[in-house]
Length: 404
Image (cartoon, rainbow, N blue to C red; front, side):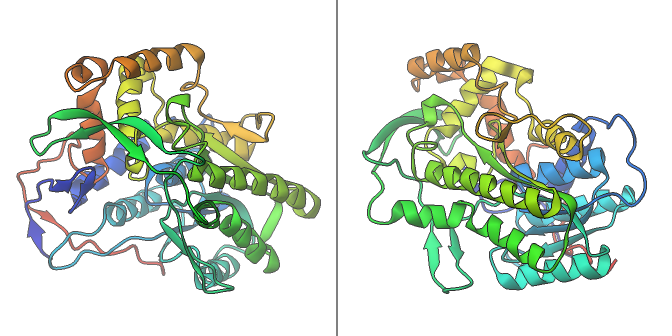
């Protein structure tokens, strides 16, 4: 097994390698940070399917589901294996660590690596639920962020874009130079053109989520009272033009409309529920690609400090609501709101004031830059407390064995 000393090498917010030990410790830290359940889950536990389980809120859903609800079942993600030249993706190593957590907790989780949009993956998951988990699924969490999707029926590949709708958007964003010095820049993003909106909705809307439900229902695998949640985001008025009012926002609106359709259907067929869960802001590999989000997150952290709610705490709340440990609370649009701490008037006013004052010269006094830099590095297993980054580390970590 090869061992290497790994140091962070990056292009902007994208890193070329991931640190296996750091990724593993990050999962362990997430487990420790997740609140203990009021009562220890007993028995085999409910059967869950989490799509997008290796990163961001999907990873938080997996860890919180293990600890709060004692889930077993199938986890799906799409990650790259280590090679002779490169480490595996961070999600590869996080998945290996999550599998270790599940074994230590005595829970049977199967981790599949592949295209969640494909019917082949849907068949593989359905077979596992049927043959290994008693033929009944209790929960499905959908947390997929992807640049493209191929429709299994037509073979057409759609590509998502991050663009405003109607007019170009000019916003501030935060970047770091090669020496790590912060810079506040003005960036302009051109408006959606042609079928940009339709393409983005086809990738990031509710079509694939509904296809999963159709596929599993068609195999008779949805248990009585089955519940499903798709993870979403609304965000601040400061980022609305490029996000909630842009092409991605159109996709999120489609996701929420899909939830209402599915909720009505599931209620009639299995006494079930379908909701979207609107999460609060977090540093993720997806969020750092959105213009303005890096600046917003740094400012938000400076305003809130430790009151910023981490994803695993938010998902612990979602699991409590889905399992009935606490009441399911929905807004007027039928959404679970886990973002209320972020969007209060006083928090948004404080962030907006700092946003207006932000320049390259002033940003260090307005945003929590040290926290933001470290959070970005931790996405790839770097800057994790307790890890000796001068020591060689094994990179050829195998994918969890699906036969155990």
